[in-house]
Amino acid sequence: MTADISLPAALCQGALDRVVERAHLTEVTGADGGALLPLTSSAFGEPMSVGEARVFHGEKVAKAVYVGIVVPQIQMDSHMVFAFTPEDSPVPHFTLDSVHAGGHHAFHLDLIQRVDAGTHMAYNDWAHAPLTEAYESVQGNPGYTKAALEPRQLTVMSSWMLAARSTVEAFAELDAPVHTYLDHWLSLLEGEVPAEVAADIADTDLAARDARNRGLLFSPQVDKVWAQISRLLGDEQAEAVRLLLLDNSLPVGQPA
Image (cartoon, rainbow, N blue to C red; front, top):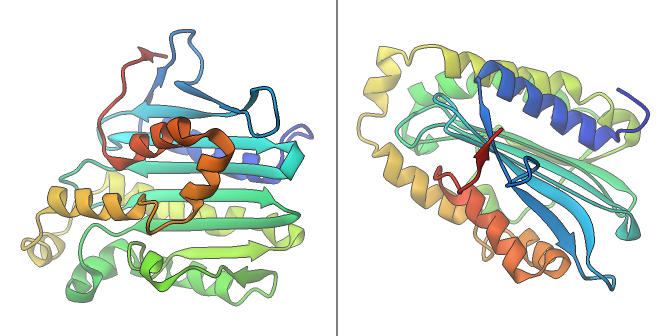
């Protein structure tokens, strides 16, 4: 890691680079060839650049979205990547948040399930059970303090979700669990769906469930972070970012 990039930025950018390379993704850029959606804030007076939203697309990964927001005035250094599989795929979506805000480091890591976990154990064993050792190692590390998420917010994520505040020392150790989650996700992405898993989830309309799940996952009524983003970026920009995450449609832009 170079000296001019923060720990949160390096962690998220490393994951994004691997997804783009392994899934052969193409970036949708703005008219100037840069990020699709530059982000500005007027919360501190004159409009100032505070980050960007980037969008990529491909086949096995239908859409990947990166959002980076850096605001020194409030000690915010926030980076997020979502990699979404196609609507009809049972492969989970990959997500990683890495943040330094208000003097604290924090992260969120998950493979978001595509079916009802309570009725599809063969799916759980295929998509998530291999993550258990990494999940338990993070949960047992005293350098991480479990994030206080509301129960209704937890329902839209997987039971293997990791979300915690972190000491600087523990944050620097996150490469290992992030690589474990990402390596497993890439193996699902590049492999075949076992017959027993396909049979287990045959009762699920994957596209319909995904639309409902993502509607809740990125709902301002479920995740209060959208109110904070709106205060920082303004309602119009915050909604533009949120809409990028709701489905796999691609915005109008230029290929990189």
